[in-house]
Length: 161
Image (cartoon, rainbow, N blue to C red; front, side, top):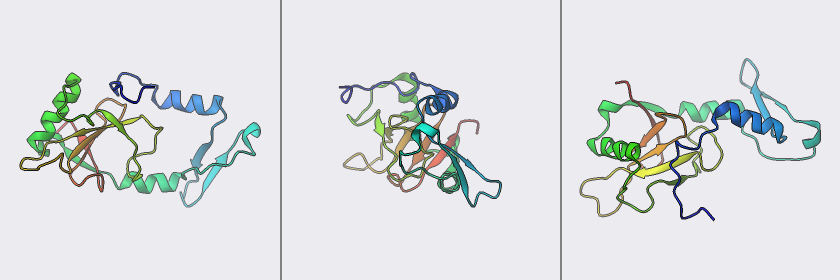
């Protein structure tokens, strides 16, 4: 029903505390790494013991998150600055896919529920199409990721430099 609608991603936040509370109240799975992070201890509510699902271990999540680099805002191409300015204003965006949900199928960004991330085009001069550059935003303030290679790698934008 909401497929064609774009909800500004930073308006509807429940945050990590709300997500944890929801998981606990609804019988979700909690995953905690042991100190050496080579194994994970999984706690399941008794009512959900027969439910089987794939859960990313803390170690797997740490490996993926470590794959995300950092980039200073000042080092981004000027077109990325333009895109971030449009996001802050809520548009208008140059392409119909801008503002749509980014599913994180590559699993490089930290794992979150569908709808947490949204993607926006960073215009590539001379490209006949959208090109490979994007900004992917999370729900947290200034949680912006830049990719210059169409989701093969990401850099978290440091807005303080």
